[in-house]
Image 1 (tube, helix red, strand yellow):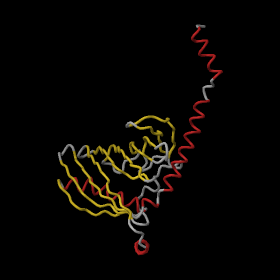
Image 2 (cartoon, one colour):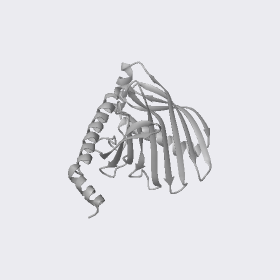
Image 3 (tube, helix red, strand yellow):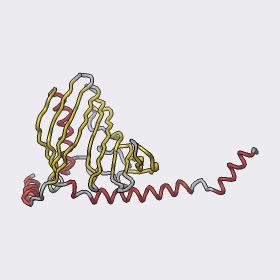
Image 4 (cartoon, rainbow, N blue to C red):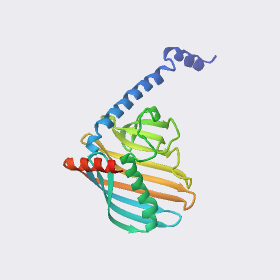
Length: 245
C-alpha cells in the first residue's frame, strides 16, 4: 500500500464520510423551513398592489415580435386582473404568447387552474441543499428541486435564497409536464427583488419550444409596485362574484 493510499484510508476513520452530508442536509432542512415561513409571512404584503408591466415576446421562426405595456392588479384576496395600456407589434404574438400567459396567471390566482397547488413546498418537491455559493456577485443559498410527481406547473430546477431573509432571489428550471401536446419543452427564469422584507417579482423569462411554429420567447419586467388602501367593498364584490360562478 502506498503512503498516499494509507493516509487516505486513515482519514476515513478520522472524518467519517457521512458526517458532512448529514450536517449539510440538516442545514438545508432548516433553511428550507425558514424559506417556507418567510414566503407565508409576506403573502398579505403581495395583496392589494398594482404594478407596471412591460412584456416583450417573439416567435423566432416566423420573425414576429411584439411589445405590451400593462397594469397588473392584485386584489385584497390575491386575485389578479390585467389592464392593457398599449401594444406594438404582431397580433399573433399578442394572442398566442402574451394573452396565454396572462390568462394562466389569472387562473392560478383565482384557484381555477387545473394545476392545483404548485407552490414550492415539501409536499410538492424533493429538495437538495447545494450550499452557499456566489451568483451574480452575491452570496446565495442554492437548492436543487425535483417534483415528487409529474404534474402541470411543477418544474425541475433551482431555487436561490437570500442568506439573511431566506426569501427567494431566483427560481429557474424546466416544466416536467407540458400544458399542451403542441409544446415540446418549456423553460423559465424568475428573478426577485427584495425590498422592505418582501420578495417582489422583478423579471421573468420563458422559452417555449412548440411543434408548429418553433420557439416562442417571452420576457416580462415588473416595476413601480404600489400598495393600495384596503377597501372592504373590493373583498365583498369578489366574494359575490365567486358565489355567482
